[in-house]
Image (cartoon, rainbow, N blue to C red; front, side, top):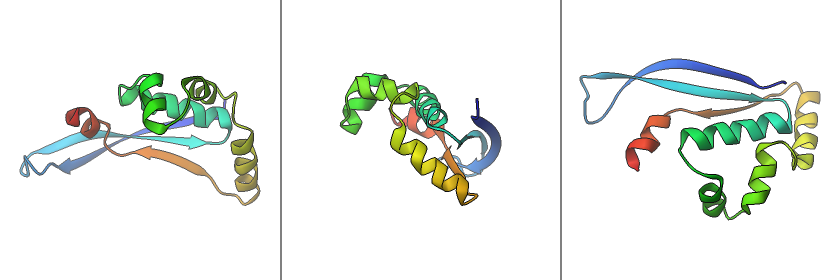
Length: 106
């Protein structure tokens, strides 16, 4: 499989604790195929602690379609887009900078 997943550790100061440094995992997915994109969506959905039903409802999509996307079964347009980018020597990278921030807001 082509999915490259990287985890980098960054340090930042939170507004509430400006003197205290907090370590946060920064996660990144490099997308080379529709399946890579689907896996990234599924990984991020799990990090955000959302079910397929919750995410599809928030995004205005059907849950079945989201399930197919996450498993790489509805990616024809995305595959064409990624093929064009490969010909241009370009890469798509998905990054979530602060997964803990979303968890704290819930």
